Image (cartoon, rainbow, N blue to C red):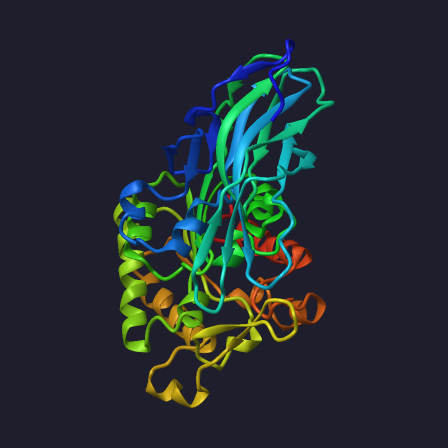
Length: 389
């Protein structure tokens, strides 16, 4: 970290500087944003879930200032997979008056080393660091610092060479989205280029991203959180994690979807609600889970380990789930005209797969995120879309 310079003023990092979060936790180092409230986090004492929930996908600091220098001290917690090369440092995106202006990273920090074969993890402590941005224009401006979507980030101190005021209300519609690791941002180049962030920018809306890697499993606490969160637009991308984890059979899946939607509707009875079925994923289209890591190539890839013959016994695949979701939305739409369905293959289908194949068989690359975002913006925010108007 940089020592305070005479021309830099420290501003405490408080919750009123944050956007895209639903809770904050005071730690020994500073402020830790969360994307689920504390009561919800307590209902699933699972280490992997705790890690992805605390990774601040879509969370950003927002403030007005004339500063030309901005420094943010943080303690990141990074992740590495045992036996694989370390991942690159997470990216901090600086957005000035709506335009991506600079990017940087914070070296050091804690490191969580994950053994994919057992699911266990070891935490190796490390020091805080500083994200530093210089050369900002000297006029009054709206500044956002989007935190790394794939690193838990404790916020310690904000320093600038001009006073800071909390960002003003943009007046834009609030979009609340829930999904899996693709919505979380796996393999995206940075926090403003996850597909939900790109789609939010294209649609001119404020994003709250409840994409949780491996954890879009129709959890009741997620539905209750969405019920209680402010939102003008809501979308839920359902299915891929249910198949990946082999978490349900057909008998349980349909009622679980109904229950999830019922709970959201308790708090948002007429809000546009878009149900998005799975994107194309060839390894799971017609093969049930569970999904297993495959390190045989020296890079992390995934393979489905289920038996396609067991579909007749209720084992789920993406093809089965798409049919169920389309039927559920159709059945409910007569009483709920603001409920909509979008086939995920319209966001990423066979032609997109040919152009932008999935590097690990599950997650898109940065160009794939851009394609998904463009398709979502067209189908959801465009004329006739669920979020048009």
